[in-house]
Amino acid sequence: MSAPRGIISRGWTQAQGRDLKNQDRLRAVPIDDEVDENGKVAIAPSLATVQSGEYQPLARPLFLYVSTKSAARKEVADFVNFYVKSARLVAPDVGSVGLSPEMLDLSVRRFDERRTGAVFGELADVIGLSATDLMQAETEAVSARTDASGATAKRAAP
Image (cartoon, rainbow, N blue to C red; front, side, top):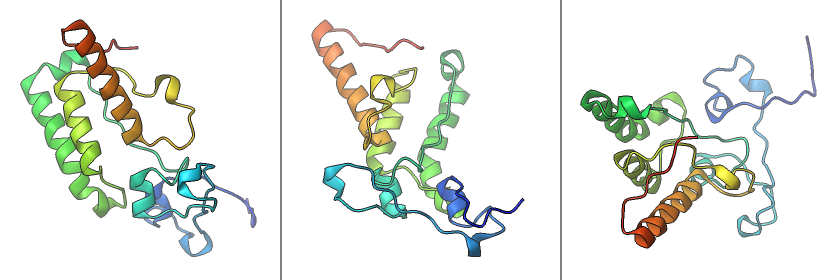
């Protein structure tokens, strides 16, 4: 089937030509995210705009899900910590965008505190929020609950 004016939505890796046979015929499309702080122009995909969260919604994070029971095992915890810290170093080798230092810190902290469940909640549909924004909002909410109760707050799994 041929679609000379067709549109396809692919991830950053595919847009870099790692997985596409017709890379010479394709181009990444700048997106106007409607966030005033990012300017009133369409934002082109680049390593910097994907990592900062400016280029949305076609860039997306890759999640690693670990059950609470498995996370209690030392070898699983060791693997998750290795994975989170190493993934940002090897991400460019496969055309992906590694975690920013801030996102790395938030991810490690979230796992160390064994917080479970999705961080998106009611903020999932807010245009212009990056994964870092969502994780930071969750961290602040947990800190506020901890301060208010005097005990460590733990988010329930969905």
